[in-house]
Image (spheres, helix red, strand yellow):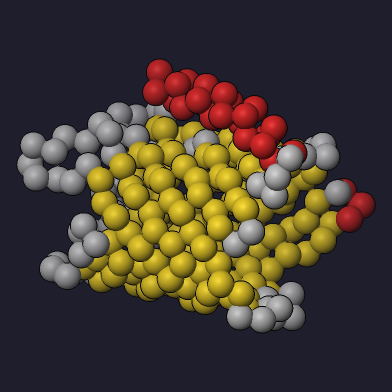
Length: 235
């Protein structure tokens, strides 16, 4: 919890500076403070109830940010991800999305040879077709030697009287390590973002994921249902 407080304090301190910069430049800043009843990534549960604050700065087609998972109900190690991405527009509807993510586990016991940091570059092809947002991605964890292939799609229904929208998402992916067995996963979700101010949004969502890992994930599960709720502030 002390680490979480320090991260939030740093985010708040940096936010005021970045907000001033954004007012006089083409930069934009987004700060997110969500709660998740479970931390699930690519069909696998990694923690129970968690806070997942993040800060992202964008300018033009370039983004850079930090995202973190802070478990609040068990002793699972926390996670901090640093990422940078660049979009290459192909036309008005399609673009190439490329970047890299550094996964950092500051509390991980590395005595058995585990890596406290891993690097994962990625490339994707995303677009907009008749209101749908399809995409395909290739990820490669260069430290763990793991490929991940994922297809995804989103769709949004405006809820104008409520100042909100109903957003649907779905994904299907495959994780293939260089050694050992891989697995397939899928996820479906729905969320409703409500505009609470000119720059603030409150979002609540529900999600279901499933994997075909023999014996399940580290919690012994193949399927996971979980909810999220949080506030996003943009500058």
